[in-house]
Every structure is written in C-alpha cells, then in structure tokens.
Picture 1 (cartoon, rainbow, N blue to C red):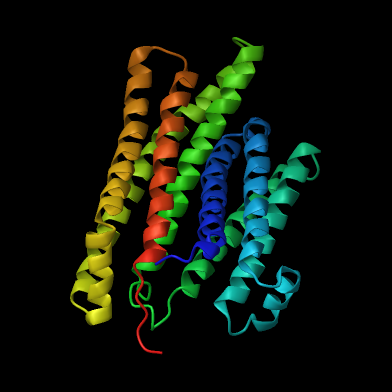
Picture 2: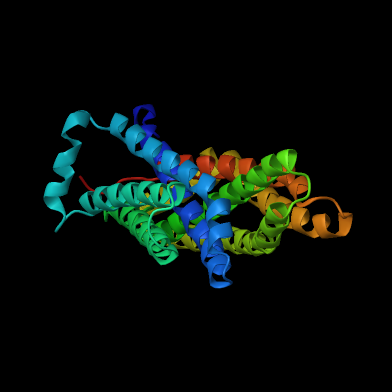
Length: 309
C-alpha cells in the first residue's frame, strides 16, 4: 500500500516531469521559429510559458522537501554524486531550475544574443532530461521487482512528454486568447497563430505516440511480472485485481485525453473558428491526462512488492 505520508514523492515527480516535458516541447517550437528568422516572435510567445515552467519546477523542489525528515540538511545529497542516482537527480534538478530561471531573465530583460538564449534553453532541456533519467534510475532496485526494469524509465519519459505537451499547448493558447482580447487582428496575433497552429498538430501526434507507448509499456510490464517469481505475480494481482478499477479508469482517461487532443486539431481547421476555440478542449484533454498520470503514479507505488529483506 502507498504510505500516505509519502505524498510528496508523487507530487514532486509529476510536477517535475511536467516542467521538463513542457520545456522540451516549448523549446522545440522556439527553435523552429528561430530557425525561420522569427527569434523575437518566438521569445514573445515562449516568455510567459518559461516563467510558468520555472514556478512549476521550483514548487516541485519545495514540495519534495516535505518527504525529508530533516529538510534543512537536503544539501548533503550532493556528497554522493559519484555513487548515488538520487544525488545526481538533486544536482540535475537544481541546474534545471536555475537554467530555466536564467532563461526567463535573459528573455525578460533582452540580455545577450538570440544564440545565447537558444543555447540556455537547450541546456535547461538537457538538465531536465537528465533529471527525469536520474529519477527513473532511483527506482531500479533489485528488491522492487515491479520497478526494476526498463518499463520504469519508459513510463517516466512518456509521462514527461504527455504532461509537458498538453500543458504547453494550453499555455500557448491561453496567451494567444489574452492577446486577442486586447488586439483583435494584428500582425502580432497573425504571427503567433502561424507558429502555434502547426505546433498544436505536431503535439497532438506526439501525444498519441506517447499514449500508445504507455499502453504497450503496461503490456510488457504485466507480461514480465506474470512470468516472474511470486512477488512479481503479486504485483500483477494487485494491478489487475485490487486496483483493477483504478487501472481501467487510468487507461480510459489516457485514451480520452489523446482522442480529445486529436479531435480538437481535426475540428478547428474545418470549423473556420479562431485557433483560440481549441483552448477548452485542449485544457480538458490536459486535465484528463493529468488525472490519468496521478492515478498511474499512485498505481506505480501501490503495486510494488518488495522481495528479500
């Protein structure tokens, strides 16, 4: 069973993965626009999303301290970088937060060249991906059969893409909506639409691929555990038995979230409505995926059965 006192762990992992995924997706969009000579426009589009990502990651770091019995001594985690994945996770997390914060300052105060801002963003993405990788490695423990396989990092990275992609989609559409409330038809609005519209379509395809990856990952995990020792089979029994209803809801929400994202992208061009009309369906798809990932993280902790002492 999940120890209710450990709620800080799922909150931290989900929020950090959302921040990392959001930064990755956002910076791919930024880099594509910058390559077309639209670095200034890309900066204006991404600036508000960058500060939201920074706040999300910083809040995740603060929340993770509630898991510690002595939070003020958390800096001691840096002492074991050579041997501990947890120490590496802490280091990469701190670097990610600092680089995202630095990027926002560079954008907000127009400091440095566009190349410097582009490089800073990619450095943040790299540190974020290293954070998620280190996070997954922490759980690869031989006594924890349900965790100790490739399915754990695959699940963590798929969640990173799902949460980040839909969160950034909702943020970009919200910013566009607020801009259109002030300026009904301007070059700025048209420029943003030209960047955001194809990004929404690409993100929808990525979301579908990530959902398929998560479902296939479950099939692989269940098959491996079902063929394993008694403790492994006990994890399968928990997932499909005691928590079977939650597991079914989790999968259903994944499917509905992906379907909603795709449907919104198919409907909008045919409807002739402004791009901002996608905000509500995309936001609902994000909520469905978020709830699904919360359930998935609960199940991740709930079904592990320790072997040995």
